[in-house]
Length: 279
Ligand code: PAF
Image (cartoon, rainbow, N blue to C red; front, side, top):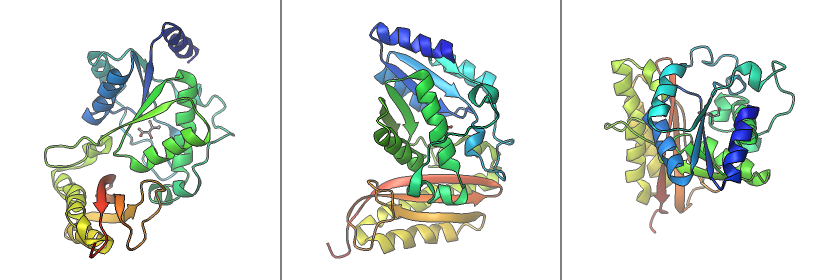
């Protein structure tokens, strides 16, 4: 930990720009896209791998979350990552827990936060710790976790953290399924059903010029046609506030979807441009 901090401090003293890519490990092409972006915007790339207990609820998949450290490190080496920071839980939370936390506020308790109470407080707390440890100039996140990106950006602004947040577009399989570490839990049938999420988002996007009701109806009809998909939420939010858009809203919006397929919970999102009906 102190080694990383002094390493990045030395690099900065030599005029290098430092990027941090925070991850939970179980890396896939989506993470590698973040690493490649980090390489483009910085001279020294740090990837953290830490399955953060603080962001998992008591009934969530903390124990089941895939841990593939050796393979992850080997792939990161191939990508030319300069530093892999993979602390233990005891290093990150020496007293077993943490008394001081960052709170994600109202937006943190909506959508993902509604199903996963305290999730975003856990995310923001660990991200702020990682930023303090690595002291990067840039931190790179994936748009797949759109709500997380919104909340991290807001934390950076609210707490005047000296870091730039860089966002990389969601990486998808050829058929459209958004890459996720949790996809490995899907069997072949579930994987086909999970495609319903990206197809629903495409349907939403195609209906954007007919207004919000049409967007929701188009996405819903796809999702209702997939009996293995148990919808958690489908929302259209304003990217500036991350609150649901009102009827008649026009402009950029983000469609969020979360669903359970079998025992696996998946999320996805798409940015659309809403036009009011008749406009
Ligand atoms: O998106 C993730 O992988 C995690 O939420 C993060 C940002 C690494 C914090 O643990």
